[in-house]
Length: 189
Image (cartoon, rainbow, N blue to C red; front, side, top):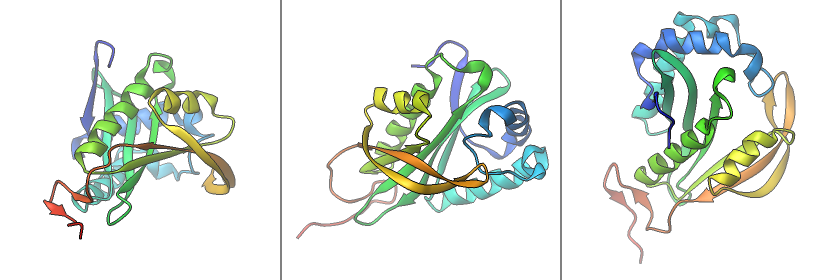
């Protein structure tokens, strides 16, 4: 449940200015968890390009991004990303909360929102990885029903180096295969 004044909405083209401001405001806060970003990423133009790519991914059912707003400010984001259909029906989560808005249950609200969206998309499973020392994010995932299932050495190239990650997953349902958005269900023999 979101505290008063916060709202989660799908990412839209018009969000470029607010996204750029949020990334500039949180640059130092996100640096340990993010890939090295070009300067253009932190501009409205750069965010317009990034949002364009993400909206194309949404149209192709590969990524669904949601933005956390507080008034006119973006204060967080979550993406249901790297969606794989077929027999896997899985996606990864990536999320962050503005440094000035942490410790309010907002990361948990974003993750729970993604779980609801994932179910609606017909996904069977969501997974997320955290760096081993990111205990706050691990706590968020555990509170949201994710279970640790492993560790991947040199898993992602973050902050200029290959980094280890602790892996979590949450099984969303055991319904038959398929994407309910397209009516494409896989019939069982």
